Length: 205
Image (cartoon, rainbow, N blue to C red; front, side, top):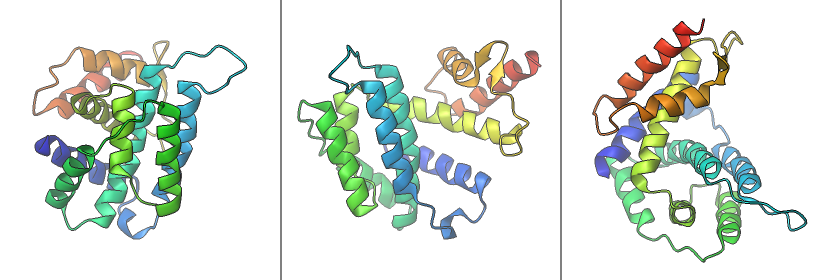
């Protein structure tokens, strides 16, 4: 677990630096990005009592991975180093306490985010438990989304020249397919995945 946390911290720092080389000094509202994602997550889980809704577990997990990106950014700003963060994450995840009502757990996490403007690690771990998202799955999904974000930046995401649709599929769909074809235990997973996305993108040009 520790090595996976350290790897994700390096990837997050690199991604933030890719978007803005001086991101540490910019005072971005990471907490705001988290609570907005929480609202989107609730829509995927379902909350409307006047119509039949079934939780879309895959989309809920994707939203949690997005929240994890922002949470890691907060931790990177607030800590003394990656080793310290790894310890915080392990300790925080050990205190997950699902209530049995995922919506209420999500609201408690969102409230904590708004009140503290920090990242509630036990609250996040509670949501993971509530939707059966294991740490290994979080890691795999995170690496995948991080690599896709890098790929988007490298291929014109900021200047508007990037094509999100390739060969009739969105890039997220290509990502899922590419990840399923690779060995998730490989140390060079991110490099292999980037190469796979590049090949797919080039072929569809």
